[in-house]
Image 1: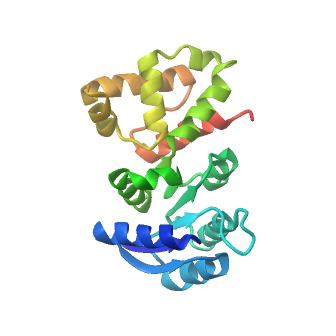
Image 2 (image 1 turned 90 degrees about the vertical axis):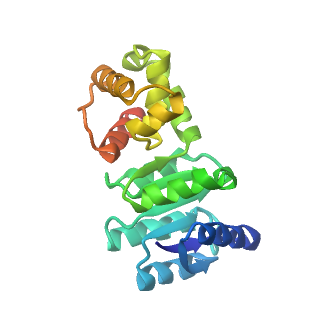
Image 3 (image 1 turned 90 degrees about the horizontal axis):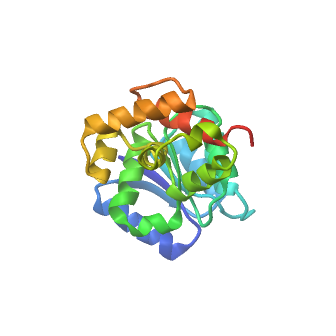
Length: 217
């Protein structure tokens, strides 16, 4: 799997290159600035881009904006964005086109190699991956005055958080140590209580849940 990596801190960039290569990814470019990222994405057509939000020359959201421009030019280009802090605006911009192949993680997640590599693979495969802290903030923002969310059981809230992170029913069942059939029942209840259309497509249901949590802001 061919990867373009954009990170301006040399030690972190070098570490990510080594980590991804250890899991059989091919790093076709490892760049440190927005212009270099734009050039690499246009010329190399990677299978996935792993991009720091803040890159030179602006050190604001240069990395994110470069990735979004590349997705407009090549619809569906898989992009996993890394950020130092939770910024819901970044997540919303990534999700705005309503398609998959996007992810938003805090940089702390890269220190869990298996979790990070799994996120890269899921995004490359067209999935949607959101950092648990983003989901928790969205849930907290909606929970206070949202009756449908208030009707969810504690277990359903757990399942909702994992679903919004991009987990399949099988993965949720494994993490919560229950049967996949039980998770299927929970997800059906969640969609019914939130007034969302039931879907067996992992990516569509993630986007639906995130859209629900983020609406009305």
